[in-house]
Image (cartoon, rainbow, N blue to C red; front, top):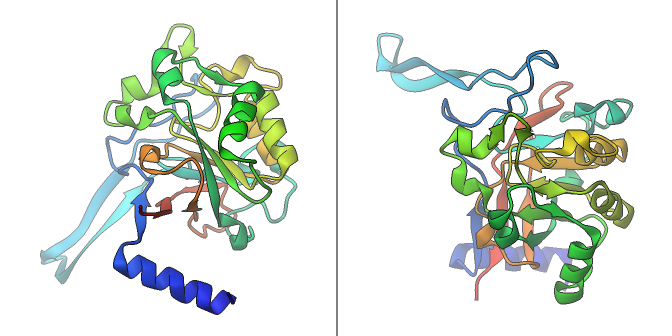
Length: 263
């Protein structure tokens, strides 16, 4: 099969519904949960604002459009390497300079939703990943890896989504060893259904925030606040995760889409 016939086949299967397009994004609006950092540590991203310019009225009689205020790392979003200090020296580490060939790739969906439901501080370990690979197959170079926690069920309630108390946020995520293991395998990036790519308590890990630290140190990408991963198979789907081409952008809200074979 040639590349041309493969694309023809893909197009035909999209039209017949044999391949389903699954929306892996949450709604972006004023109620979208926003990461809350300690005020004495860093400045926070503002809440999303949507302002009307016109809607078939005196400000624009034939058209409706809005302007928005939002941060790059808001809602379902993409982390480019330049987002973290460890990735600051990659010239291709911005949203306008990265290699777009890397953004469309097979996705490995690691379903540990039951464990995450039982323990908000669940940490994915190498043993978990190797057991998953033994059952579903090897994770390969150039592929996405995402943790299915079903945390998107809380996306309409910021308090539940952030799940923070006096000790800090409590959300599941990977250990540093897992991220290093996946980086060594050559993955293109790692994704989570939580507010960020790291576990809530990752600030106390070594290194701190290992998903951010190790992914971006190795010119890999991060995806956060993904949705509907329960609609994806463990293997066999293609994930499209393309950020806006923001000049010197460190990230961007995205419409993450998965191509999923039916039947």
